Length: 71
Image (cartoon, rainbow, N blue to C red; front, side, top):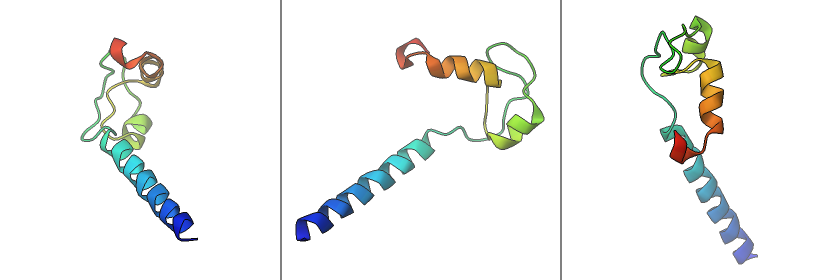
């Protein structure tokens, strides 16, 4: 039983670390008014919902599909 409890503690620790690491990569600061890729206006609703966004939805989706080494 002790091994199970220890395994659960490690799982919780790794999950929490993963959540913190993901949060650290989220955009911060003020959102751009125009997309850095296509220069189209970024809708106000997106700028409010995604703090620090730099891309419109279409460009953000395209960038997310590219492998990291191509970004």
